[in-house]
Image (cartoon, rainbow, N blue to C red; front, side):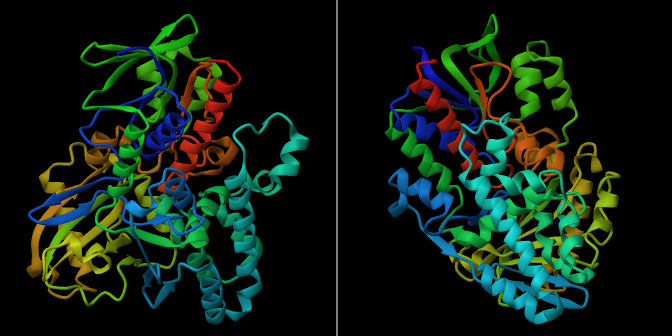
Length: 496
């Protein structure tokens, strides 16, 4: 293979986004993927006629004007994919109360304010701040000068103001009622963090990417989205190499000159982009001795997110017991208690769990007269050493038992069962400890504190959820776009 302009390691959504945009500019781009399938965690599988999405069931920013919608429009793909809007977006079940969350922010604020009229002003202020932070991040150019403080203060004042704050601190400033704080921070669990730890910046991305442009499911399978990106990439003369794992980033003096695959084949390139685990990128593919001590120290001090245990079920009959497809069940009104146990590598006896019924939104996920159900809970990687069948069976039985409160006779209706553990996620994505969202979105690892797209190696770049903005599909699309913009600017200047 002749020398490439750009080599991208990893065909996750960020890598595909970046590759499409660079190939569209006319660059010669190669994407190398260790799996036989593209998409990373945004993939799907089938078992005995039932279709399941691995870990991504719903997406934000898919409606008109959203980041994903805009990308598809730019690549002329809008007529090849259909999004099913979810309204309401989800239901949260607490011990003594059910809370419905709309996908429309005005409806959501009005609903919460009607439940807690004394907190209306605080609720409005919290979402006003989240929106300002989200807008600043969404419009932030890749060329922003992080060393020009006056420029930063004029362009991203809210990002700077809240860059070191947790969402819990923001709530304490504006909200008095403890249960209102719980409701406002309930989606922090989608980042696998309690409100006392998740950054305001991270929470802004999670909340506003859904509220601004709705919550949607992909009609058919969620992997339709990355597969379309792959087709668009190849249509623009990009090359995808599947089933080949990168063993080494090749260096000459202080620059990356290409990659070596595990089969010992080598490919040279002017520029390398890593869309895989950051620790693997620098400690394994590159080598610890290739990066400065200060950068190595920062990297070693960073903390990956928690992971999931997911149970996929094929069910006999419809799931009319569930009024909405997305549910989360809590056994306590205090979100933080669960994490105290998770951080000890245990799972609470009454752990909150997610209950998703994809076939209620899209019946094509199951044969006629049948349904799909996904039950999941947060799980630390070291809860089990080998994640053998005994542990898997115990967790599966526990989830089925809890879900039976909402779906009577669930156990008798199970036709198909399969599971994913943190080890499954680690094996498929390559993410250390099965991290679901890259680095945990704590203040010291969010926003401007997350790894930058540039690295100590001048022609090695990063994209994906290990860099900003963070985890989630809309966020990694943003990362892919920003990395592509930064790289194209350098090509235009003649640096490569």
